[in-house]
Amino acid sequence: MRVKRLLPNASLFREAAKILPGARLDLMRWFSSHARNLPWRRKKGLRRDPYAVWVAEIMLQQTQVATVVPYFEKWMKTFPDVAALARASESEVMRAWAGLGYYSRARNLHRAAGLIAEQGSYPATALAWQALPGIGPYTAGAIASLAFDAPAPILDGNVVRVFSRVFALNFLPENGREQREAYWKLSGIWAAGKHPGNANEGLMELGAVVCKPAVPLCGACPLQSACVARKRNWQETLPPVKQRQKVEIVTGAAIVLKNRNRVLLETRPQNSFLAGHQLFPMFLDKKVRDWRKAFAKRFPECVKEQVGSGTVKHSIMSKRYVLEVFLTTFIGRSSLKNTGTESPKSTWVSQDRVDEILTNSLARKIWKAVKD
Ligand code: SF4
Image (cartoon, rainbow, N blue to C red; front, side):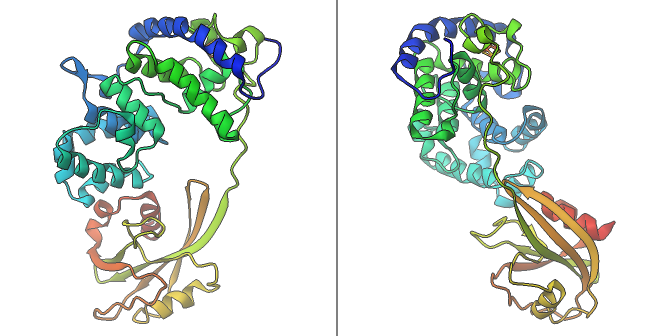
């Protein structure tokens, strides 16, 4: 091939049908001797534990393997099976997840555990997994194939990179429907054969440890004889670079209200920023110009002085939150007025327990700003 493919066409799938069965065998042979020993890969009897595969796949969304391993080990001790997870309270689940970020993953895992425990068995197909909260097509395919050996396609960044290089695809799934379907179709061809679980996991492994983004280790790659990028020296330019998402800056303010040895925490309302988390009262309102005035209006029982304790910066997805942090003393007896646009549930918490209660990094940064 002389040029990179700018769009999928019939010749791509003819080529894939010819090349992939042999490449698949080569890759599975390589995987049987090179697979990393990861805790979720251990088998229970002859099969992989669907619970372990599922928990790991959810943790691995947006998080590196090295970070996930200790969390996974601890999680499996705390909630060794789906019934234990279903029985746990939301705050126990959030505590075990604290530090991994993207907390909706934990909430969905917990909700899905409740549904599976109620049904009494795990779904066995990708489609049935997709019906559970927090499980998209990639995760469903990965769980169904890895845990149940179902011939389900998978598509993550690693798989895209390998296919893009092997077939010289100069486009990405996010470029359009036709492009996305082409990648899924290639993955479907890949999965349709013996031992789809091993074939899929081997493909992900290859993308993670050999066909790396910056410097692929082509000399050690089982797909080197099939790979167009290697033949043409196109590894550096394939896959094409993603358009960078614009980062939106969101400014706001948070206040730590002290009352003797207690501080005020609020449970963020449903459908709001960090819903369900315990956080210090905050404003993220573009219309507010003077945070001190806004807090004084919302908590008139505070002493007048609100001491500025610096600025906290925190990124979540494509947003960068820049929050001014204030510290003040609350002198009212009780009756907190919720005069903000949202009505969060407020609780006074002993200062000694704050570290243990706060499960998200933004709240911890705010707490650190007033403690330091
Ligand atoms: S030969 Fe190189 S570029 Fe091609 S799939 Fe293997 S590691 Fe990736």
